[in-house]
Image 1 (cartoon, helix red, strand yellow):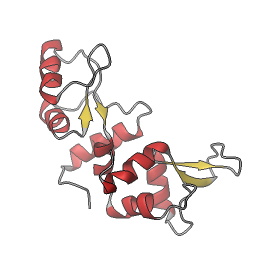
Image 2 (cartoon, rainbow, N blue to C red):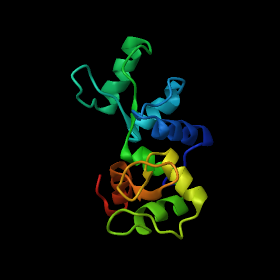
Image 3 (cartoon, one colour):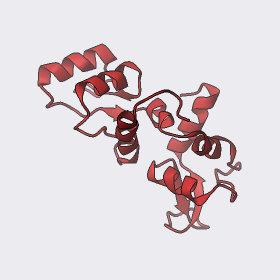
Image 4 (cartoon, helix red, strand yellow):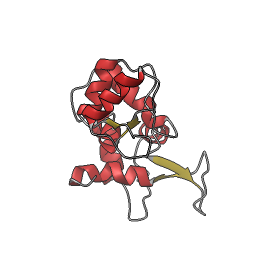
Length: 151
């Protein structure tokens, strides 16, 4: 179960943003969903100086630019919202002190967390390796800590 009740379309957009290397929401997100994402802090937008705009200002900026503006970026809260309980439990509770996921975490869960950039497979030296051991990323740490009220 997700953290909140979001439509399948909303969750699909947030998943795409989580999988995007820069965390950008897809450009085809409609104005109604974009408003929801900004107001509920699932996403944010920066101004030209890199300052995070308050949701209302971000929406005004979008309207003024007629869609030709900087991208909206997923937040830690948005990344958490796309996880089901099994994925969140694996990320937040089935990890050792070094960040290694428990070998009991099912492979579909690991693969989903890898796609969302919350887990990375690594070799013994800590280098990325497609068939390596799954470790929680820094971003995964941030999402896992949302349960503790951090982030």
